[in-house]
Image 1 (cartoon, rainbow, N blue to C red):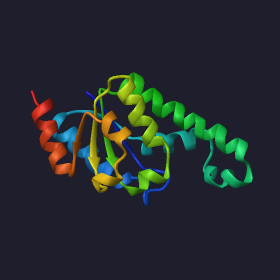
Image 2 (cartoon, rainbow, N blue to C red; image 1 turned 180 degrees about the vertical axis):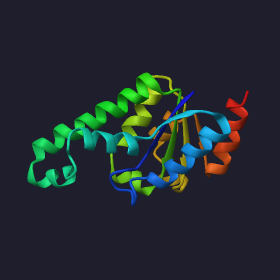
Image 3 (tube, rainbow, N blue to C red; image 1 turned 90 degrees about the vertical axis):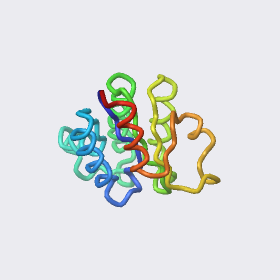
Image 4 (tube, rainbow, N blue to C red; image 1 turned 45 degrees about the vertical axis):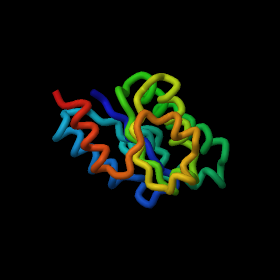
Length: 154
């Protein structure tokens, strides 16, 4: 099984690296699932295109910035559509400042890829669209892990 880890990056403190790293270790150890971590794939994309200062391009060279970000979008959506068996999504306030996670969850829903959402905002702040794109919603990673063990342990 291959899992895609969706959640805030652009507006998150550490691009969401910590929770993804912890989940990757758990998924590999407990379920022997492979993980697509967009933090890692984005870093590789930056290196491949020598785009170390791409965030500065947003202001200094918007056309170049958009071209590079489109490469990241294409990579992420391809990973969801063609390579992932399910998605784990951390939904918090940081995700609301961006757009990628919204698109990833929607695309996964459209392609019938299960979305397991860990919601960390009050229910009144959780979009009905995102709720409806989610296969299951959990309040904590502990609840999610319990579900994944029941669902994917053979």
